[in-house]
Image 1: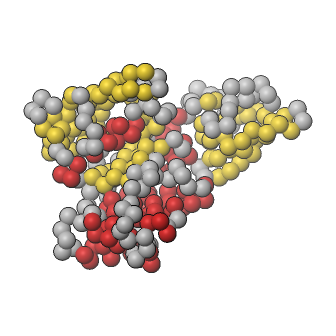
Image 2: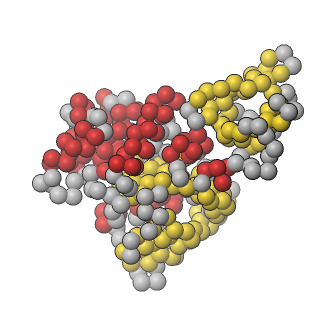
Image 3: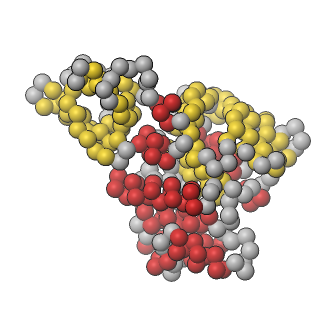
Length: 290
């Protein structure tokens, strides 16, 4: 059980806000932090890892105190049993793939573990390559592999797939989920991709201006249960194109691209990049911005 009860002032594009979180995360959860840029998602991830310090509060992981402002306890990152995968992967450019993994070993005598993780992540053939010669997907695999080298209790993922194309993102989502299950690890992901949230997470914290406004399963957080409909799906609006008097929306839903026709009134407040709930009423689509 991870208990987080912290406060920290943040300066954002919306002015000064207070990130205030008082929640528990169950061991084995795959939790997604979802919200707009500047809401405090990445800061919360970095606070858990010990890369940033809250103004006050406490963090307790399986009865071990990682942070307690009242008792002046603040474990450094290297003493917190977490693996962190950064948005830009943060691989050491002057080290090969194998050397990047060896650097993360707590015990230098455990070199066999490097071979084991390389095999699990299917990157053994990349072991001698330098990061600048790797594709985005390969860098992501290496970054996850390095994060697993210390047998972490928690895997912290700061939008690691955001720079990848849809096909590669879908493949690596499957791999992240497989890693989560294989190592029985608690995973915390920052993501803007609602399809990714539904695919990976069993729990979501929706954050707005430093406050967790909604929590629960993806369906509980995003689906509007009051809508009368014959179907519902969540999607990201990829494009909106006019065709005669109608509009054609290209949507990404659960890693599938679909097209829906709509009138101008149907999509009056919908823009490209929005996350929407699509439902139907009398065979007509209803778009609800999430």
